[in-house]
Length: 477
Image 1 (spheres, rainbow, N blue to C red):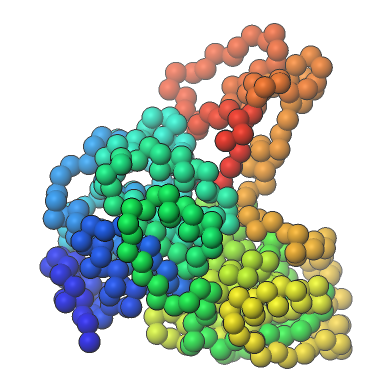
Image 2: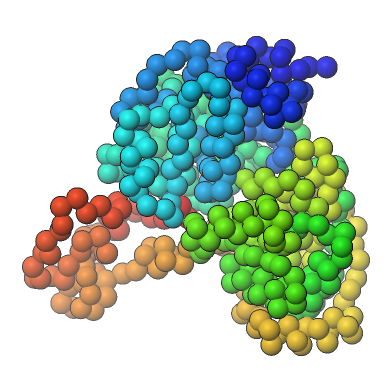
């Protein structure tokens, strides 16, 4: 049986792994680590919870330490792109844990926080940077970071990058990378678009596929309950009240829905907290910390938590609403049954979600055991109370819902903002300037108005040309 000591990793890495109690690599680690150590490009396909982060972090740390040299000023030797802030934070923590005896530096770059500390961290150069595409593009535009010294480029959760609309910024970032570099792509699924992107960026890659696309973890006991949409909240409260539910993640389709479910559960005496794209970074971190510490029994989340949130001992995952992207079901329930443990996943299905259920069962190649709780009189009475505690949100056809629903509302407003009569960037007729000349919020002014003086050293973030078609990605971070 293969051990980490058999993979040729440096002694400081083996010491850190021993301290964490890791001795035997997972299949993705066993196959990927030797390939990455050899310097080859790699395309790794493995379902969530199989140890993809260590599969690239360990050999990267080994290579950087073996060829130790200072990172360039405002640059870095390894760049890891992640779709969400939470996943970026978790990846960076893994790099720090595995490399704590090696003296290498690690920094995270993501939105929702001030630029100053990030600029300061990058100023002297960093060995490993874990970043979300949006904030990294901002730093590149402001010249507070550059990619000239990148030796290893990692794209993690590539399929979620595609779902969130990050393909354009990824291509822009890749265009600024040195031609001579090692490229590593890791993903849980392999849609055609990701295959095309991999073909553009990878050079003669080795491929490691541990499980078929969209398969679910065998240790998860899955079930589905047919229930009326308006009775989901009392049913959820009933199930969460069971002592067998020790720690649960509840997935909703929308951010408002997450807030309403959390509000109802708290009113019902169940400790709950919501996490989604409209929460500030501080709110997200506090909610996650409370959940990890066991102070909160249920965390209500949109698909922002479907990947990258590695919390030990999550006993249950509830799909309060089925995802409109079938592969997201796999990632959601993968938050339980981690590190060899078993877990339970319970999904609710209303009549308007039947087509989503069919798509999930087709993608996962399985039939989920079902139970029927429709026309339950006790739930009907509780549903009437639920509407008073937290009114139901306006119905949205799940088949038309945008999978990128984690874009914060303030960014959506900026993206859709045109010229406003009498406002900044508007002409006398009340329309935005033609040809993409409307400057929007970033220093724009009404036509003919004098320019306002800008205080020296006042950096409030990047300036984008709002009219440019290639700048319309507006990511969540």
